[in-house]
Image (tube, rainbow, N blue to C red):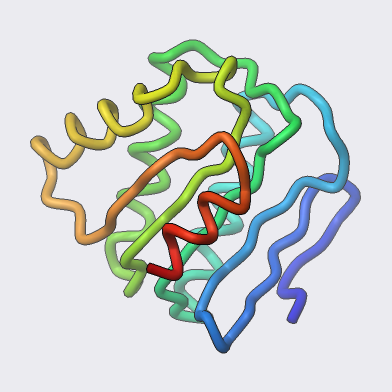
Length: 135
């Protein structure tokens, strides 16, 4: 079921696996303001639809932001999802955007500062991310 769609991205919900799927409409470079807009939409949907799993498919797209900006964006998403029942969030993205393993490191640092009730992992391919979410 499509919850939101525009020329830039769409949010779809699959009730059987209980996953909110975030996909970009085309392959391109993403900037901080665009990622922020996506994250705000995810948080808004989380309040209304109460999903337990989240898949952000940024595969084939390059996210143009510094590591500091990335940390801030991840913190914004994690804090926004605190009142939601989200248990797992998977990010499928090109490994040249943020070096492999860096997402998990940033997540552990956030987890040390604030107890987050969700697991977060990054994957180079959507199929791997989906497999982890369903496990």
